[in-house]
Length: 140
Image (cartoon, rainbow, N blue to C red):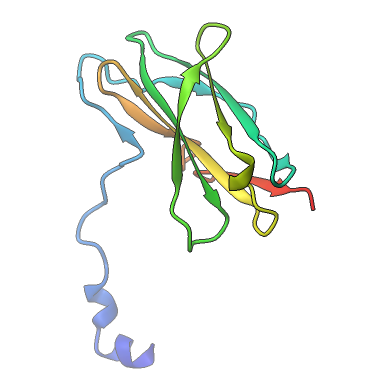
């Protein structure tokens, strides 16, 4: 580190401009609001059993899609995606993670991606408000 500081390499590593906010994508400037999402976090589950996750998603222009992204709490895994489907009452969406995807070896994490009919999208949880994912601890 001292050698790098001496050579002023650390100055070269600083970003020249602020990175764009990619957590919210806006397509239509007349409707710049991403869908609203409400969800009660699931913080524990039993391994090897299916887990149904629900969310309330709404938008004045209508909801184009809701996706559930999940993986084990290990950086060696890629996220898997399930399309959430309308279920029951208005604005309610569900997806069920198969039991084989809930291994007792690792806890797992999930997040949501949403898009409205005007092309506005967002990821939840929003990283400027909390961690950008929800961790589910497995009952072992």
